[in-house]
Length: 235
Length: 200
Ligand SMILES: Nc1ncnc2c1ncn2[C@@H]1O[C@H](COP(=O)(O)OP(=O)(O)OP(=O)(O)O)[C@@H](O)[C@H]1O
Ligand SMILES: [Mg+2]
Image (cartoon, rainbow over all chains, first blue to last red; front, top):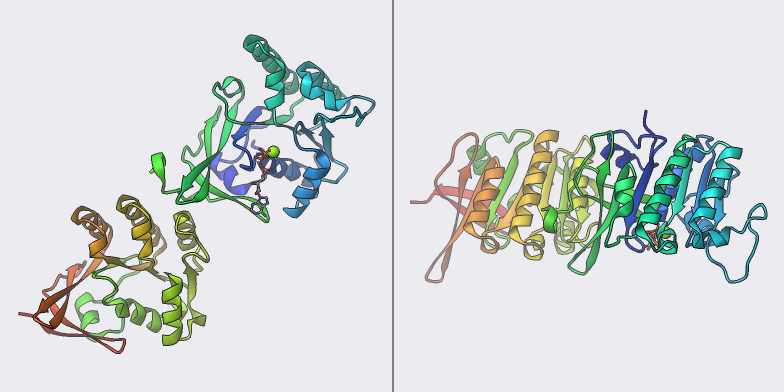
């Protein structure tokens, strides 16, 4: 059984989609489409009547709603739960008297809050976008690793498919801990940025190992899953 | 398919679906051959071209029936993947694809253009599309030209010999499933191409 990413051509690259109930990482530079891709994924579930959870750690949810509307995604529906955990100047209680804006500073509190939500209601798809801040809250790498594994294990008990986003770092701690990694890469060519999507890891499945071109369009992400970029090291 | 130039059609025979026809030339000499093929097969063709050639074609015939994609408008020179994608997704009734996008050879290293061409040729073969393209021999080295020829099923070679103030143009079939030929006189006048007698 597979779960759609919401981008049909990416599902083909994944030989049918993601394996549900596991954790995945979408990595990419600024503006590469990480958020857009995760919204594709969540909307796909929401359209099927599933309950989905989006935790925003950087982009305020009202701005996200606006941007996604331009791409034809209405995330303002009851079964799409968006939590704003972005750091804000004045403390506000956004959700059930809990200070979600604080979570960016505190991995453990965020994990607890998410798990509490999962206990109360069934969510099939969860996105945390991005995990950058979480990593910054824990100095000790071993401690971060431990927290991260604990979180994945906890979420796994609720059968939800988890998608995390991150930037590229020097070290790839999360890459080893998740079931799959999808990278959104950029190549400069004659003054133009070409974008390429590459699955670098997908446990439990064969997958397309090539870098495939994609574009961000008025309808979101379009992957050219049969084409090649004709460029650089991937030539 | 037949191009519509009597002697050339005789030399080439019927071009089977899935073939790749490569015209090796100097600059744009002989582009009339591709234009003639397009003109004759308007409603079956798609053409990938430059804005300049688009204007030129518009003067020759009604482009309305031809499916076309323009370099710099429908795809950037960097976006070769859009071209392979377009060929893959070409409507069923379009089985002739003509590529008149020489500037790509200047924009990209020739190795890359070759890989691109080989990919186009593979798609054409798999889909039963006749692919026709031109290549300026001055823009690629011999090795690259040989790799292009390797991917093509038909190669039309155009040469130009200058004798004093006189220019003699010749055309030969350099590669074909049928048979190759010697050089024939190539006459181009007012946009019309004629293949004449065998050159000695
Ligand atoms: N209609 C559109 N056509 C082309 N590009 C678009 C369109 N709408 C948005 N974009 C581009 O999509 C990108 C934003 O995508 P998204 O927010 O998903 O990226 P991100 O990787 O999450 O970025 P960040 O690092 O800021 O979180 C921007 O680069 C923007 O220019
Ligand atoms: Mg984002």
